[in-house]
Length: 485
Image (cartoon, rainbow, N blue to C red; front, top):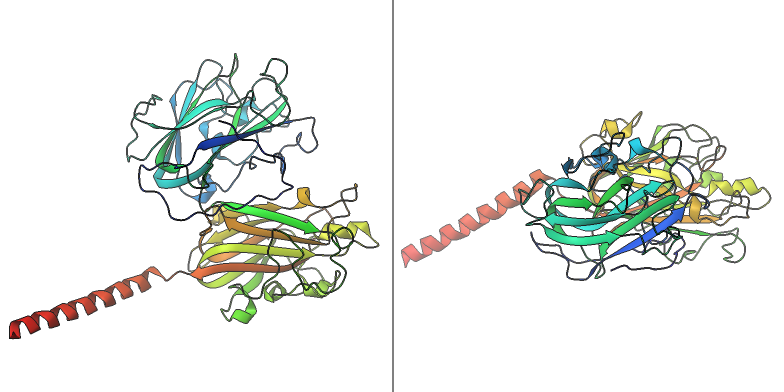
């Protein structure tokens, strides 16, 4: 069954859910999938890494559960079939990249077989509530359509390891050839110079089920095998990124002075009630650990003051950098925090000089770590031990004057977990800011971090010890009373 819906202008709605799954349970709603295709001739598609190619299917992710950067030690193997000579290995399915080797025909960056079907097995290393499974393909012609069946198993040892689905639980069967709201595959139904994405989910808004093993049986849609570029395994902590922008003039009329009401429809406005705000007394600090702020910029502490800049051009009330990249800001939360939502805000004028509008779009990668001391914030962050949480780029969703430079007056981003519970537990957060253009840095006005403190494991042991002691005392008193009687 295929579900279609229209373009939603960069807003990805968060899904809230209660509870989780017991081992072996499966989704209670209907499992359906959305499919989209895009031609390379369309704007923004014929590039190495399309930023926002689809409207109903999420873009591929470098922060899903199976990504090596998440350090979940997910293992992949070919269970049946033989990849074609020149094909990439199974690791290409979890590298978080669109296949591109100087061109859109990149066999070494994908997994494919022309000799028959392929079966790929995922070992997630533990039982996981899976919320979505997303698959992606790319080619210049007839290797883009996706035809496959995915199965799951909650057992510690999978039912089979040779590609035979006997004993596995059927999750979904996908066929993208004739079920796309995007451009057609051509008169034969098999040819597409472009990209395709499929997203499997439960229409009741919960997980697909709890599994430790997944089995993908990838079928050839015709004479040639599909160029599979990525398979994302999405769990409840996966970030849902809502982005919104408003122009200082018409039609939204944010204005050039103080902002006293929420300028957004879907993103919360700046808050002084979040955990990180200076007024809350938790001692959260923001420190530049790589790069340097520009002359005239405010200190990193402006990100914690719970205020919009008083005007549309207030450099001393925002944090920005015009060329000292990488530009990285470390947040010390002072406690282990179950992070529930992170909102980021920017503001700048678009009057007089159109290029100034390039200071509003937000482009950054957010990392976190649950450790007593943070890893190094220089060099390769993932190699240093940082865990990627979310990748943000608001540029595709910004207003423009047609030249791509006159961008919105205010922009807001809200990062929330898919399950509505937690993005994860972190002591430190690191924002790796990138420039929105080659010349200008974004005017970041505020970063709000919402969450709940999680006690240290030692604290839990003390609580458990205390409760046990009280129980033993009470039991002793009861025994003594019975003895006297």
